[in-house]
Image 1 (cartoon, helix red, strand yellow):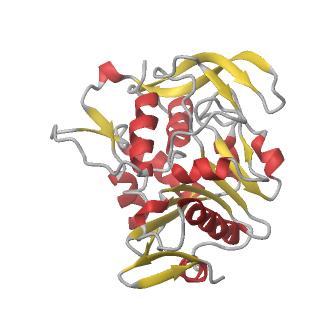
Image 2: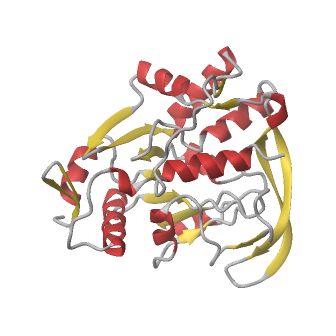
Length: 302
């Protein structure tokens, strides 16, 4: 398709060019779980407004999943987290807090949403209605959307983000914690609040989430370098330059296995003590800002 997306170094990138760059790593029928920052690849074209720009990226993702694939995008709202005063999650109307593209996608036709009040996902494509119903009461356990990603060996894609830290890794962490050895920096915490379902029905509910214990490891932060090195060593992480941004692709089984192996060798595989107190500079519109500030503030809340 000749729909133009952005410009970088005088070169126009259209959907066809991006599809060609990714074609070796994505095949028809794949389940794609994409964490995305659309603003990291180049300049907006002068004749393309914000909504059209986002619509063009949605067309790109549709092309990646057609005809039998599934597109899954985070729409995390943290509605019952420490920073939320109302503790209400409205599946139809509660905005996500992880960037501008997920919010654009959330209100598009034929897009379904899972009912997790903190870590909801948007689903588009084959069997989307039924997939969106997969929502366990324990966010990162084996009875929710992450099990679906694992069983279908979804492609876990970092689209324009710094590093590679798919939220799926917390599923791998909780599996290790529950089935192999307790991780002493996390625990399963209960959250309570109100849900408004897609029919407008309101009810009180509870949700469990594998959360960080802040006071036990004060000054420690999430660390993705060990996972990246492990995947690269086995040639299981693919990095593709698109304009000024980077797309990183692995699959759920590879990430799960690398996580289990890494945690068995070092229970602090995913965290490290921060030496410098210099704050990181982040782009206001960056998804990485939303993911790190919101996701880990929520996961670390007591």
